[in-house]
Image 1 (cartoon, rainbow, N blue to C red):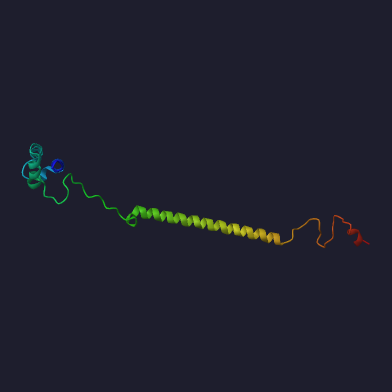
Image 2 (image 1 turned 180 degrees about the vertical axis):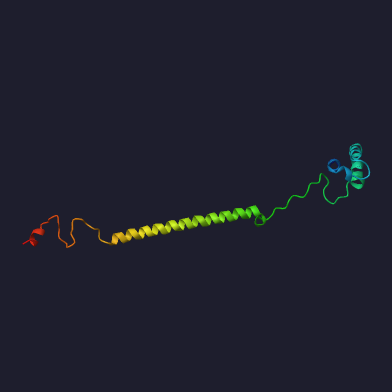
Amino acid sequence: MPRLLLFAAILGVAVVIYALIDCVMSRKHEVRSISKTAWFVTILILPLIGAGMWFLFGRPRSDGPSGPRRPAPRTPTAPDDDPAFLQNLEAQRRQRAREQERRRREQEQKDREDKAREAGRDTPPKDDKHDGEGNDDAGSGSAGAHHP
């Protein structure tokens, strides 16, 4: 039995606290029957009876929660609905395309240079020591054998 009384007391206090908070949070012009201040005093003086009367006769009839009403928060828009986002996305796409084009041109230039170097290696190097007929101007040991 004492546990039941303790539970009832805790429940009664919770109902009174809820009624007080609900009364305070309600808009002044939406409170029914008597003024908001009178309801607050009634709930304090006659806790359970005042809270019950508040819920039956004083509480605003709105379906939503009582308290200060704020405009509904703006629903987030999808990123593809935001013009600034789309402009930024397009600028990033163009920047990537320019960067890829620059890299492609650099690679082509490098490939051309590599081909030119390879082509230069395939031809025998020109040596100033040899004349056009294959005679050695420096005078090697075999050169004397060719002279009369």
